[in-house]
Length: 465
Length: 144
Ligand code: HEM
Ligand code: HEM
Ligand SMILES: [Fe+2]
Image (tube, rainbow over the protein chains, first blue to last red):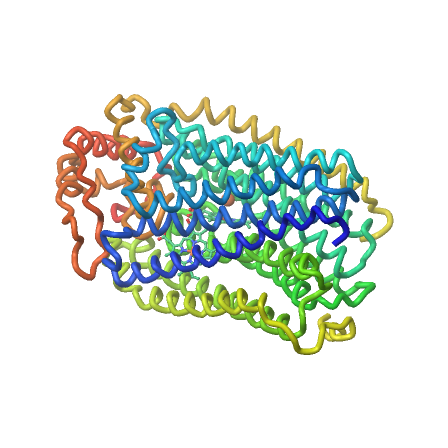
């Protein structure tokens, strides 16, 4: 570690991993509710489990992004973080606010939570992914402002690398688009239209800038390839992201009461959204093949390559599958959507956060890379989680295709609940794959505490390419 | 990438391209705002419907159901439930009101929300309003 203030990232990473475990447990609860309808009913209804699952996901990814920024911004800027104290303070504010919100979901009925948090004053609750009480949303904005101030000051006062500037742009964009979560018009069409300015412009816009810059940073470090080369790639990738992804928002405007020209704009531009993800894959493998050094952290390299591949599969391939309007007409809001949502979030954002943790955590704990045994276990967890996520995606896709077949693409449509029962087997298989995912995650956590084996040496990496 | 394609060229494509397409997106949004009133059934947007939307949100209905295809996939689409229930808000009210507090053994169950009569009528009115938005002929059939 070059600068002692980078160490604040450790707190953020630990919290991220802890919340990740919680997210998966609630995923498994819901997976069971899919086949055992009244499991935990009425104590934890499905919608409550779902908001816990998705909100924990978003919050831990935000912890991961912030941790990544606190780690890499000082190193890139070649100076200490502007205020490590502010970073620690905001960590606790965010953690406590997050924990209280989750407890609120679990302990009182949602309508009561709305009442307790005075949702009437500025109603923003009850929209997918944005279920947080208004007061929590305001807290998120305050934390985001403090965070942006802190890393912004660090960047302005130091060396301005492309990695830092792109990361900062992505993070500012994240905060700006979140502001649309406060706009909840009575008009359902407008409500939906601008809801996507948060959700789509996050995951297919500004978050990709964050993803790209973190990936670029880790690749610079572990491959030793000339920064000029990597920065050029980064610019091209994010250029393609925004050129295709902004108008690509139109793939959500087909059936919500917006003009039908969006079927053209959305289809054409979103069909090109896989391009930047494909370039990311080519980029990562290229840089690793041209590496100038053998970094002893083999696990980090595996995560970096895995991110590039899985993001392309989940976002690029599974996104393309249902993005053209004539296809989306049948798949819209089915298990196909859930399949894509899972692999895309995992492949792009879960994996990039685990990549930077894998790279930075050993360094913050005083080693260039973890001991060999620890790395082997971490790589096992990589394969278990990644392969089981592939299976989750395949099972949900199977469920979705049959759902479309029986309920939508037919002259004799059957009712939703009847069809759900007929495709139950896929939900059992999904739950099984989810349990394997959990095993992988437990191994991942354990890997941090495993010591010994030969200390990782540079020569060990010779066969990773 | 080759030497002819320099980093500053890449940067210019990034700045120019994203700026251009963001402005185009704003222009399309501006046009959409003009077109939406022809399709969004705003004539039906009464105070009761607005209350119904709030009831919808404050009970997180979207956490199980889809509405015009967006939301969760655990329970049926509700954008067209008014039509599926024979164009009857009464049927919607009766259904929501009739959910057993302890669920239906072994089956996916909808919670009993204990809504007041005013809230029940309002949420049904909201669903009626939603079903009359012009959604380009989606969903493909009455089953949603
Ligand atoms: C890492 C990037 C991405 C992530 C994390 C992501 C995630 C998601 C999620 C969670 C949803 C469901 C939203 C909801 O609940 O309504 C969704 C919907 C969708 N995504 Fe993505 N996505 C990504 C990239 C892409 C790309 C590149 C494409 C196109 C090529 C795409 C196409 C779609 C489409 C068409 C839908 C709507 C599905 C429907 O009609 O039900 N996504 N995405
Ligand atoms: C491993 C076990 C997991 C299980 C059993 C599981 C299960 C579920 C279930 C049942 C839903 C609700 C689907 C519905 O609305 O009907 C859901 C939603 C979601 N989960 Fe998971 N999940 C798991 C892991 C994950 C992971 C690792 C991620 C992130 C990478 C994730 C991200 C999401 C997202 C983004 C949604 C919302 C999807 C959408 O709106 O389309 N889940 N999950
Ligand atoms: Fe999208």
